[in-house]
Length: 511
Image (cartoon, rainbow, N blue to C red; front, top):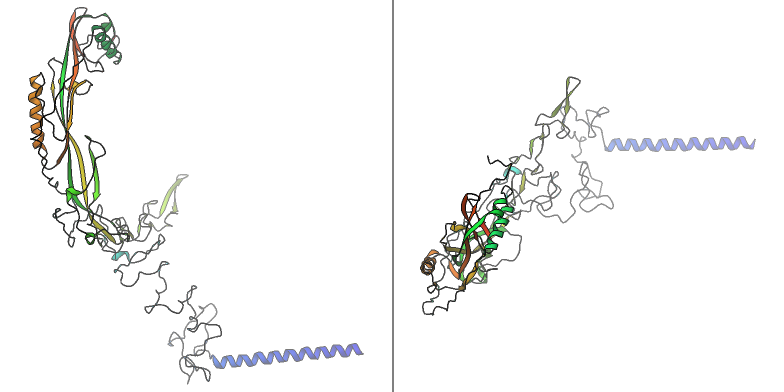
């Protein structure tokens, strides 16, 4: 009997609890409906978008309840704008539909933050050019501005406008192209100096054995020459002589100037505010080697000026010339067709191009879809540093005279070594006038006088004259019934034998 009473008591308690819960739910629902009355057109059917479709003829946001203001009444004692929820920032939470990243925090600039859809790197600061500056480190494929407003890219761009650039004394109007040589200062006078003492050496000659050994060596270097003639020939006469080779070298320096522009990234500027630039020929530059051609490029001190890049007009980027700023080009994989044709089992099968996904167009490989590229002239800096660059050229001018009395061609003497009988190096040499051979004296005077007038726009730094005696031996010989000759010349014992009798050995045919 006691157990039955306990069970009944428990059932009554459970029923009471359920009724209380249902009553509270009903009350809350009625309260909610009073505060948020449904629109006059009713609720949208299932499957409608989260915001619901507006009733026909009603505004998109629905009509507010009658007698209440459009935004509803605030609770009594609350400010007109309502209290923010606890823990929310003073400025309130953003409305529904805000981006995942939220709205900017308090303290944003008066101009506000960029609208939704802006690239990850943001928009350019106020005061930037119309196209904006390119953001540093912008990811590929995300253009940071309108490529159509970017200046057009110029291939092989070379600046030419010198408007606003300062001119300097001694340099004249310097352009971007290499100008004429700057006139050198007048050379010093050497007329009062006495000519130095000139001493001449002697040359060498060769013997019969050396002449035959030179011929054998010459024959061994030609695969089609037979060595029988060199071994069996009979030398009938040897005539030794010396070819004289006079050489005059004039080492000169020339200087030209031109304007140069390099990207400016905020480094130090050596401008005219540091003082006037030095005179063109007061800039010191020494050659690495005398009597050798060299060229050096040096910036003229105190001539640097910073100005806007003339190619991108200060933007730092230009329109891509390959895609014309569009950012997309015809797909290189399918040729713009959007599909590939595959032949199998005698039938044609069309497959969608996986590179362009069937669109027939793909991102430009040069600009990665941006439509613009970094300015190649200023490297994206937007500004360039302009300065005068001086090109210093060291050139060695060589003139010579060869005196060779045999029938051997004279030009063979230039390429071989000889005995140096005279060598003189001075800022201005004196011509040879006391050598026993008059032809050498006359031609030395002629070449030295001609060198004084040959390079008026360059400064003469040094001169050197060398007289060499190159041994030349004429060898007459007989082989079988043929009598001919050859020459052995130079310290290397080179051979000139145009009439060698066995120039084509057995079994070789000259076509």
